[in-house]
Image (cartoon, rainbow, N blue to C red):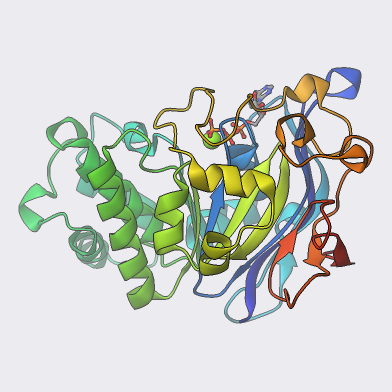
Length: 336
Ligand code: ATP
Ligand code: MG
């Protein structure tokens, strides 16, 4: 499959110099055209920081301290999102890559009707469309996400949380972007609603053909709905594989622990059932593999050398990668 977004050796810090917190470290991750890629990891592992960084929406004191993000438009040459000017960036967001952030449903403007807010997005990006064409487009998109015509003129407070979230998804899709990033769009919703929204998104993806980067704590949702899964720990990707492969046979002890755990529905840090201990403190990262203090299988090398993400040497693992020093998992080739 062809790549649509290639994140390469990406680093993000909060703050500068010796005070800096290293929130994202050397992340290399490719989203392919039309696929659903899941990103999972405990609270504080850097998932949102990565999403903000990739779209250059990182609030201060966040600093992108290295790496590139190559976007492949459907027609034309690939380019590095990190090199875009502010004006180019404004076009890129929404139209090429759109994002639904954690708690996005609360970012709807309370004093405007949902139809008006969606029409405004269309107006800003496609000023050539006639007013009636804009309305028609907004209607069509709201219908697609399950908001019927009689609710179009509702104000945000008149809708349930699930409906507001669907409005946000509609806004993210209205300009027909190639990539949609969803950062835990379902945190505040109940489990049944989470499942419905993700299922609907996957169905829309099949019709509209965009790619999804879906970020969540809930690995069981990803196993069900995504094509591939990347697992993040302490700012690094520690494993990536097809969902079925990860589920059947995870290679990183952290992934294994996550698969056995129940997700924390809210963002607070707490122990996962399958993994004793808590996520690393970014101000005092453990040496070597940052998971080693919690890892039941850690040995000498784990505390001294940071494992690189690569294709494991053992068996016939070709389309997956892991960062682990355990026998059989040491990489033959490093993803660069
Ligand atoms: P969650 O699952 O809770 O959403 P996450 O994986 O999205 O977590 P991030 O929000 O990306 O994690 O945070 C990664 C790390 O960066 C955390 O340790 C966090 O404390 C730190 N961090 C985030 N924002 C800031 C900031 N403004 N200043 C300093 N550190 C920050
Ligand atoms: Mg987050």
